[in-house]
Length: 341
Image (cartoon, rainbow, N blue to C red; front, side, top):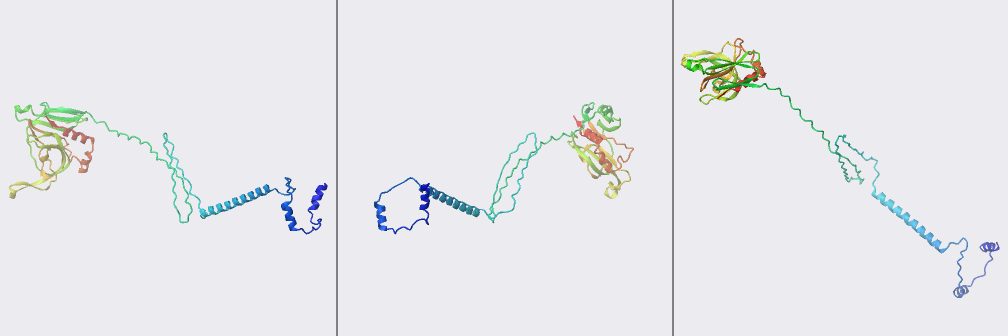
């Protein structure tokens, strides 16, 4: 206790007596020549040299960290431009509809472009999926109405033959002839439809005759018959035509030759038959004939129209409408199938 009291009183400036004036030369000589005493006891309240060094290191480190933070802040502020309040665009993700066998591949793409303000352009990730193509349904095959079975008819001499629809019938008869020697070769065939009505006639091996006049012909349909040519090799055609009879004037100045003088008052008549192509010319011409010379005699084939009903069709438009019917198609196919063997 006395020791503590003496230490406190020794540092009290008020309690110390004024010291005598120190002689500098004596003090210096004493410091250089006097004994040196070292002690590891540190007075209370006095910091050691190592603590002071550590404290300086800590202060220097703190100052260095602070300077680094300030420098980093300046650099960051310099790199970032003005803060933009525009929000980044929303990210849209498209998800394909689920399918039994989905195949989805996501592709991310990013693009950046410089702007005048120096602000960074936001990168918007996108996700795209390949289009899912639904399977193509097979195209249904159109229902085709069944085609009636065809039957074939051949004349007794084996030369002329043709096809006709099942359900129709063929009635044969003796054809016109000039002598007993030609009688057997002349045969006629009449076709009756499923209702028993006569619809067509075909003759083979008979003699030829007939007369004609002037008509104004309108050809509504025509096609080549591939199985028939006459004895001279001329082409034969199927034809459907409207014919208006013309008035005839025998002009004496022209050698008495008939000359058409306009349409007659007779109703038009329709012809559907097989004839030489030269006999199926449109316009004002001779009515011609459907007789075709063959090696066994003449033949002809034609559709039977009701001659008591004139005209057969009320108007040309009605005739054209009939061309779209099943009956017309059957008759045309029958005439086109005629062939000579």
